[in-house]
Length: 160
Length: 298
Image 1 (cartoon, each protein chain N blue to C red):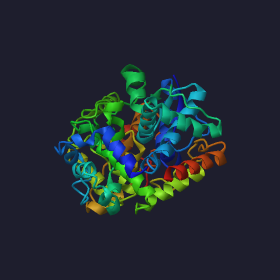
Image 2 (tube, each protein chain N blue to C red; image 1 turned 90 degrees about the horizontal axis):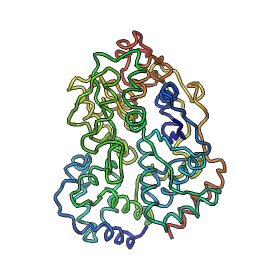
Image 3 (cartoon, chains in turn cyan, red; image 1 turned 90 degrees about the vertical axis):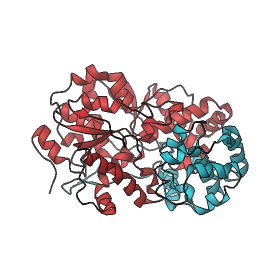
Image 4 (cartoon, helix red, strand yellow; image 1 turned 135 degrees about the horizontal axis):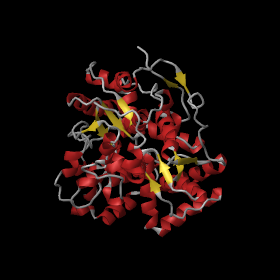
């Protein structure tokens, strides 16, 4: 993902038609709680080509993906999808982002899942795992090496 | 009724109560769940935020497994279901992207066609099984209890690509609750987000967002909150003590259930088989009312 592909996404979505009505921001669960996160302003900044500070400040990572902005936009725009585009560009530019994303990506690439089966505590403070719950073993790719290699390849190629 | 059963990372690694309750009730309702060999993460959330091709590849990869099995996918998690639906939608309208995904899938000898049906738990229970099938299985009606339905964002939005229920006025989970003999009623915060996707960036904000909803549910006098999303459940149930601390309200005590746990109880299944000992919220008073015994500590 690059800034050029962002311009392409903006063009495809026709983001310039945003009326700045604010239905997105009034629906957003984060706008009222996190300073600087405001889908209406994010759209305006992207449409003006001023997305740089949104990516540098890290504010794009505070979207909850509730999708109310996408649902309620009277122009059928999607601040959510543009925020995801900004995240992908920020990753490719190696701008600061929450470490958790790197950890999750690493886990999925190496094991096929975000996390491995955990021991879970009951209200009686006993520990339960899949086996003691009578659940079958967790699944993972049969040819894990091929799967890992494919994902590594994709992540590398896209950066170029 | 046979489905390829897709669990997703969070259910298979920690939300055992959801999986156990689904596995306990579905065969009794005439639904055969077939485990999917060799599945992996659906790609949401990590790859959707990091790399689009890695995300689409991840979702498509799991759909090819169901295609090979010749079965529709029943995806248990709201996030996974939406990830599959979005991927299917994107690849349906973009042959170039589809070819790119298939080129990657070929390395494991897989090929994505895009013909698979995707089924959400609300569709399976509400639309496919339906009122008659479910009500005839109820042996222990949940009389005198009123629950707040929380379908979760990804079950209802974005409507433009098709979701299981209405984006502004979802009713299916409410119907399902009433079919158990319990009551459901609307509340202003019903379609609000649990905040869980923010856990990576700002854990405290999640707890504040979730706390607002739990406080409202308590204020309106509901006996508990019911959901079908493992991410939402994790916040409202598993993190309820942390929510108490962050919002400074030690009195906050809202029992939280997976719908399938309540359905199982109403069908006469034992609370242990439904993983109800794993709920961290105070569900015991409800268990005492329904089956005259608690299974928790304290």
